[in-house]
Length: 423
Image 1 (cartoon, rainbow, N blue to C red):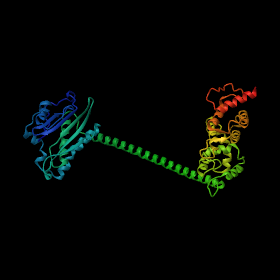
Image 2 (image 1 turned 90 degrees about the vertical axis):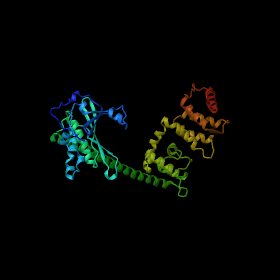
Image 3 (image 1 turned 120 degrees about the horizontal axis):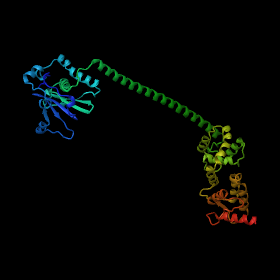
Image 4 (image 1 turned 90 degrees about the horizontal axis):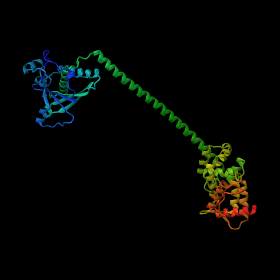
């Protein structure tokens, strides 16, 4: 198997006259080199007849000179005819290095070597190497695939494949003598890119580390602050809690009101229970106490006292007051499965919850409830109906009130009583 030597007298094909091919296969053979055209839409198999139909001799297609076997033998001695020494193997890396440099200077992808195992015993197994080179041209990218002779050493087989690739590139007007300065510039550019990427990655890693460290410190400080705040809230709870039940009972609430300098019937105490979401009238659990005081950011008695005016403003917002008004009714349901509240308690609750906002309506409704004999208790529907009445009906005219609408019967009777009284 030989490579044909260059013949100056033979015509050299012009690269511009060649038709660009997606893929080209160069393979060494006994009579020189053969070029196989690989079309993407044709699947190759082991049929020798199809393989031969795809193979065209270089002499016929590229008009290279026909070289006799003796002349070729004089030009290049095959590797398989003589065992190579270690020094010879070291010299053979020049073709691979030259091909690598050529690809680098021309900004092509690095050559890709693929090893194929040939048949034979393990101790005499031959390796066949294919090298692929992507050639970038104006017309597009052409993949050059070159096969070398089978050899029992991979390095030598790869070197032969690289020689075939260099032979083709040299005979198709590609300059294969690489300028060492140009290659050094290519290596310097690649080294600079690697250094920039490494520096960017290092900077990003350092930045992430600093950010993570700062976040961890903030979380740690925040966690410590929260723990100390909760300890102070628990300490304040223990000052008013009953040691046997671990609850703030009615006596504890009275003591708390005394220290806050507000009466125990003050609406702000009911608002505080709403903020804690207290379930049982006259009792605060530790969990409810923590929930309310943490929301108010009050971990001392002084802070709690200052937080009460802001709490009242929060409750009296229209978006919150309806929920607080319904909570006040539920808070007074002291018995299990209780659904209504007696008239006397309702009158007191109306004074506390609605007295400062709807004074005329509350006065008339309380007076009516005390003199009427039809109702002994008020349920949730009637309670919420009076809130709707205060917000939707002008008082004392009540011109918008329509008894045909879905009003509780107690309110129909109340409006009728007022109108009789006004008449």
